[in-house]
Length: 115
Image (cartoon, rainbow, N blue to C red; front, side):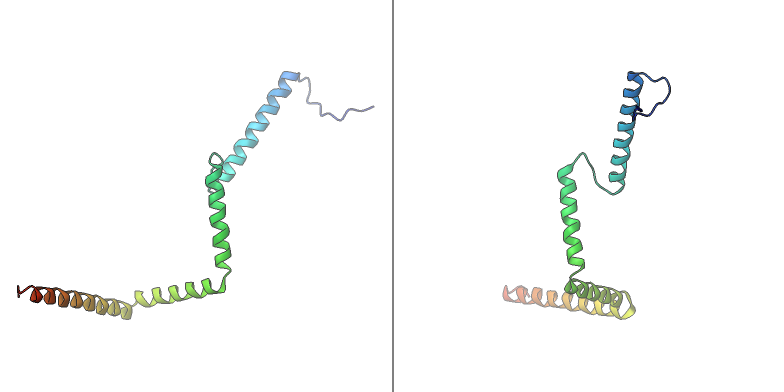
């Protein structure tokens, strides 16, 4: 009758236990490093679950056609505002806001009789 054991030479039970412990620690460290490389800390399981929930929601929203349309609009607006016409547009808006603030300030001063 043959045994289903691997023979590694003249190893005693202490040597086998040591090899088993080293293998388990190496596997644990490899798994820990792999998860850390993916941005998950195994020492904080609640935080990891929260991160997975956020990723799940993000994945669902990315598949939504309305979300894709919103992102297309944001990209179109960003590229428009980065050009010369966008700079002129932002300058016009800035001038309008400053003018409106000046008008309100002047009106408030005239109501108080200080102008």
